Every structure is written in C-alpha cells, then in structure tokens.
Image (cartoon, rainbow, N blue to C red; front, side, top):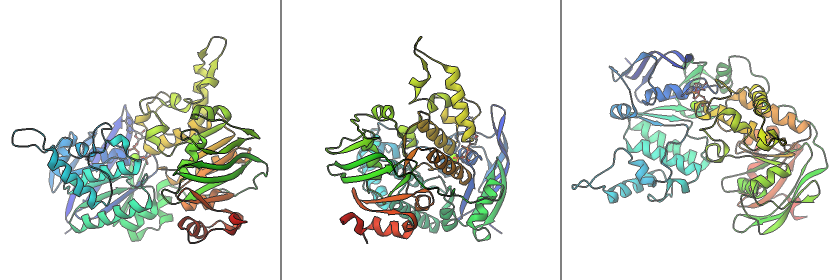
Amino acid sequence: MTDVLLKTEAIYKEFSGVPVLKGIDLEIVRGEVLGIIGENGAGKSTLMKILGGIYTPTSGQISFEGRPVTIREPSDAKKLGISLIPQEFNLVKDLTVYDNIFLGSEIRQRNGLLDKKTMMARTKSLLEELEVTIRPDERIDRLSAAEKQMVEISKAVAMDAKLLIMDEPTTVLTQYEIDILYRLMHRLKRQGVTIIYISHKLKEVKAICDRVMVLRDGEVICLEPIDKLSIYQMAERMVGRELSQIFPKKERAGTEPVLTVQNLTVPGVLENISFELNKGEILGLAGLVGAGRTEVAETIMGIRKHTAGEIILNGARLEIASPEDAVAAGISYLSEDRQGSGILTGFNVVDNITLVSLRAYCDYAIDLINSKRQRAAAQQHVERFNIKTQGLDTRLEFLSGGNQQKVSLAKSIDPQPIVLIADEPTRGVDVSAKQEIYRFIKSLADMGLSCLFISSEQEEIVGMCHRVLVMKEGRMMGVLSGDEISEAEIMFLATGVRETETLHE
Ligand SMILES: Nc1ncnc2c1ncn2[C@@H]1O[C@H](COP(=O)(O)OP(=O)(O)OP(=O)(O)O)[C@@H](O)[C@H]1O
Ligand SMILES: [Mg+2]
C-alpha cells in the first residue's frame, strides 16, 4: 500500500462567483516529488495557496497523514508541517534576512527578548547550506531577485517541513543557483520530505519529478509517472491541442542601423560595448550570469551612468538621464524584474498597461486623461495577448503570475517604441503564451520595430534572433549571425572557450 501524505477530495474554489478550481482529487505520496504544470491561470498557485492556508476552499476536503484537516490560515499549515514557497515574494522589504526567516517563529532569550545572536547564527548556517553568500543581517531590499528567492527557500527549509511546496522557484534563479536548488531537493527527498514542484520549464519537471499532474482550467487532466510523458506530450496536455512550431519563421531584417551603441563603458560593469541594431532586427544578448546583459539595457535606459561611449538613435546622439528620457526618445524597456519595477500590483490592468504612455492619453486642451481611449487601448492589449483577467479594473495582484508578465509586455509596447529592449520577456509564461509572445515580437519586427532580446533561455535566443551578441563579464565575446547561431556556439563564447576572430579584425 502506498503511504499517502496528503489527499484532497473535490476541492472547489471560486472568486466572486468565478470558478477557478473545479473539484480537485489528488493524492500525494510520502517522499515523492510531484510536478504540477498547466497554462497561466490554470489554478496551480490557487491550489497551493489552499494547501498553505492562504485561501480557504469554497468546498472540499483535505486529509493529512490520514486525518481530515482544516487549514484556515498559514499557521495551521505550518503546524501540520506544510511549507509554501510562494510564486511572488512574501518577504518584508525593510527587515533583515534573519528577521524574515524567523518571522512569526522568533527565538527568544529567557527574559523574553529576541535572541538575535542565535537567529543570526542559524540563518548563517542555513544560507551556507544553500551555498549562498548573503549576510544574515542584510536588508531584504538590497538583495537581487535570485537572492530573495534563496531567502524564501531557506525560510521554508528552516521549518523542517514534511511537505515543501515550491511555486516556480527557478524563474528568477540563474543556472548556478538552480543547480544548488536541485542538490537541496535531492537531499530533502532522501530525508523523506515530500515536495510539490510547479514550473513552466518542462525540462526541469522531467528531470526532477517522480510524477506529474497537469491542470487545465481548474481541472486535473492527468496524473502520471514522469516516464509516461514526453516533454512534448506534457505541453500538449497543458494546452489541450496539438502544438505547432513554437518559433515563427525568421524573415530578413533590414540593414539600416536604428540604434548604434559605441564603446559603452560603465566602470567595473561594462567595457567597450559596441553594436548596431538594425531596422526590423531582433538582436539577441546572450551570456551567463553576471555577463552584463541587463546592465547594457539599464545603461541605455539611463538607469546606470556610463563614463564613456555613445548611444545614437536614428543618427542623433542621445543624452539619456532617466528611463523617461529613453521612452520619450522611442526606446522602451521590459524589465526582467516584474515585481520590482515592471508592474504595480495594487493598480488595475488599465493603469498598468498605460503607465508609461499616459501622456498620449491626455487631451491637451483640457489637460485631462481621456479614459475612454485609455481603456480602449488596454482592451486591445488584453485581447491581443489573451490576458486572463476578470476585467480591466481588476488589480494586478489578482492575476496569475504569467498573466502579470503579459501585462508587463503590453505596458512596454503601449508607447509604440522604435526600439524595444525585452529582458526575459517570457519569464513565467506557459508554452502557448510563449508562442504568442514570440509571434507578437516577430510581427512588430516585421513592421519595422527593432528589438534587443535578452534571455537566459538559449533556445529562444536561437529561435528568435537574427544576430546574437554574446557577452562575458561585461565584455563582448563575439557576434553570431544566421546559421552560426546555435546553443553550442553561444556557450563557447559565453564561457570564454572561444572568441570570434571578427572582433579582433
Ligand atoms: N485573489 C483572487 N481574486 C480573484 N481571482 C483570482 C485570485 N487569485 C487567483 N485568481 C484567478 O484565478 C485563476 C487561477 O490563478 P492561479 O494564480 O492559480 O494560476 P496559475 O496556474 O498559478 O498561473 P501562472 O502559471 O500564471 O502562475 C486566474 O484566472 C486568476 O486571475
Ligand atoms: Mg502561479
């Protein structure tokens, strides 16, 4: 007989009358790693939040270790030994790392005062176990997205959970940290911890899960041992139809330069970066962690100051001091940090999409925002990107992670830029949404938009880009074009095994 740790029966959940989970029956076996996959908005995070006590189900029953349980709030889940690493960070920004890890379960001295020393020391050893070099007394808002995620993971591990739920833990992690996470998961599994693992990276799911469950529109489509399904079959079950070619066919790009970057230098960060981005071209920026890809974007956008070099747009030299200047000049930026600077979760869909282009919706004569035009534009984006939302006035915090990403993309193209810098544009979106985003960027390029495409997924760089600039440690290692573009070639350059000769001509 299998040892069932957790069982859900007919879990049903609706938000304001809209059903999101439609009767979930699930048995999780002790010690397994269960993968859960499904399209954006399928209900994955909602189900996990129910197990974590953040939401209560509209109806249905949960049993844990053979006994029926009621999980009304996070502390109930904690008592049972269920630990949830949420998709969106749940850390208190102006507290330290150790404060966050022990939040709600602080260690106290005999006299009742907080035992800072012990908490610091425990945090230190937890972080060491995860091989991350973060100081226990560092403030959360000074950490990178990947570091924040590692703190979330430490926090969950610190609880000695029986069931550890990870909701897309790797979207913001680099390969280095992903490897650490895998090692940790293996170790926890050996210790008998049961893990639920949610991800849109199907290769990951295939590699580390024992079984996989596919959710579609709030229903369980299948639950199978991982060897029973190929990656392609997983993708098909998610979307419920056969998948066509993921990447659109590449057309020829124009040859007239739109954006020219010459000898761009930021001391200690970027060294002599030069490239031309042509009309209608998709130019990839590839490299490993710390290669300086995002830094190139941030320098062009005026977020970082360069000490040497020039940025020229359509023949005119730009003086960009801030992102507003860049947007006004016609350069738009889709940031990799969705929660940090991409969107405002407390604002609704319309306000987010039209945030940077608000001026375009002002009627100058009366200096008022024309909300009818603003809404019409937002509606168009919602349809074009197939954004799953209850309405235009829904606040972003109520959208699923992938749908927030689509809003972020809509926001960056709403000002109708000449150049779009897309930094990890498909982070956290499902396979069919990826396909939509690729088609969309390509159709903009066909209409003459130039795109700087930054991605850590080599596959999409190869599938989408006309040329690829590969960087390492703030320097250019080479430029690949046409048939030269392959994952292997990119890796050779990114790791420094090879530099292209063209650079030294
Ligand atoms: N608090 C809420 N209020 C209203 N609707 C909600 C709320 N939370 C989630 N939803 C809706 O429930 C649906 C499922 O969302 P959920 O976050 O579970 O999706 P998901 O499968 O995790 O998707 P993703 O892959 O994009 O993270 C979505 O349509 C979402 O808009
Ligand atoms: Mg989710």
